[in-house]
Length: 254
Image 1 (cartoon, rainbow, N blue to C red):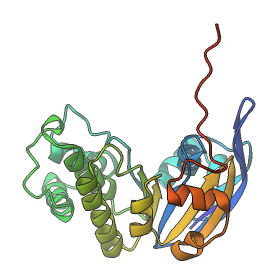
Image 2: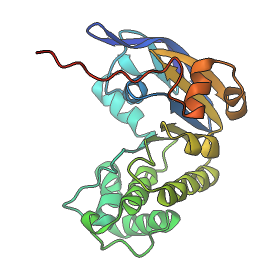
Image 3: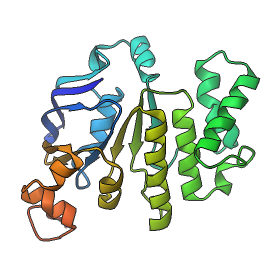
Image 4: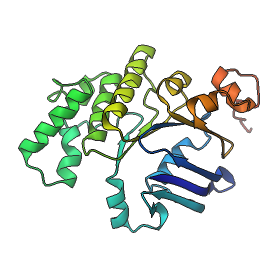
């Protein structure tokens, strides 16, 4: 359903993605990993049409995303559910209203049907009694669960996760990993997870793609990528500061 064909994207002199090609396996969880600033977010923005490639094509279910009209892109986006990094819940709406929002915007379901679906999705993510709660009353992990309920409420073919375990303590992060595993098993749809969390990657990924300096330097099953001799891949997995990946501090000019 998803294919990147020789995709390149730059911002001025900064090359973010350089001739990237891959096919995302259907019905599996694919993790896109790499150090900060290596193009993971742009990878996702190209997929949902928030950015256009300078060269190449991103194809979703036979549609070249960058060539679609606004109306056509709107229809393709209905195939997606997105869990944003901070959850992106509407503070002016309670939990039930947040989860119901896509249904009220994009369907003609009755309020009774909407309430039933919302209750089902909240129960699926372990938040069955939270409908009347407000986002500011929830912990970070709870906000992620509600955001996931909203992401799956339209029964999407593809769910995109942007750093789902960021800003969470290790125990809560592990519970979110378990929830992603459970939801993928239950929904059987395509999950794409952007992350740099190595423990999460090895726990939930079926396939792994690693970005480095604009290139997709690794792509394959979890075990295939884990065993690759590439020194960048192995440095990243070992969480070692010694190697080709170097953290360069900013230089202040006076």
